[in-house]
Length: 265
Image 1 (cartoon, rainbow, N blue to C red):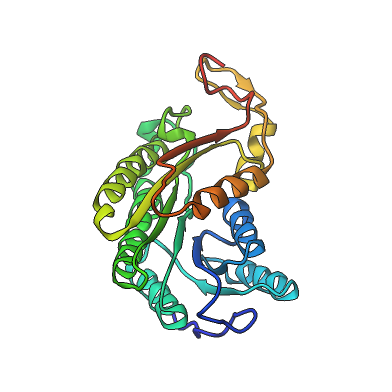
Image 2: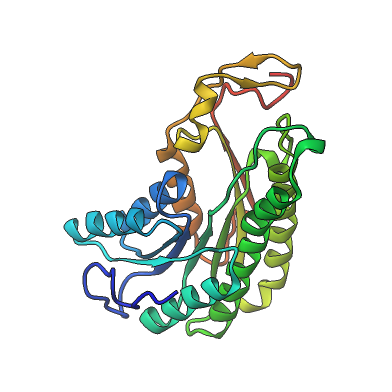
């Protein structure tokens, strides 16, 4: 990727203080909100994402507030890009305490037979393979560092429980993330690596703004859906991150209370 390790740092790093967190998809939406909350609570935060300008703007915000952030442009679907990301983390901080696997994408809302195979693969590459690549690299770092261990938090979705109409690629990957979370939670025990998942419904971000205009429902109707402040998601992820490694939120569902999810809507 060619990004200098120290290019976008905030204040000078002190390896003796502050836990290190990595947030993927940190340029906007949920990732940006979570990164900002972690920064506010003293974490040194590595910001990963494909849009360097958005990452740089968050680094500037952090610097102005005396917080430490490091931007590393990364495409989580690309193995070499993920390797560069974690090489940068290792070189800069020599450890990682929290990984928030947040980067994701959706496909167009079309019938199954109209979904292009390349689009399917692109969604799977980002939402599933990207999480695997980042988790794999974080696992290796966490089990070898001293003190050993760390926490991996996966951004699932309420689609990990039930699909929306015409969402086969996104829904399939989010169901798969649930299996990945369980496997990592099990395999990480002997290395003090905790893994949990937050399943989010209708946080008010650019990705969810269409909910306020009306989206298809299971019965064929188009309905406006309530949204919740993304700050609640940031608070929830912070709670998960702050737990001691002896405790773990295995799964958390956080959703706009009145959205059509439980029951028949």
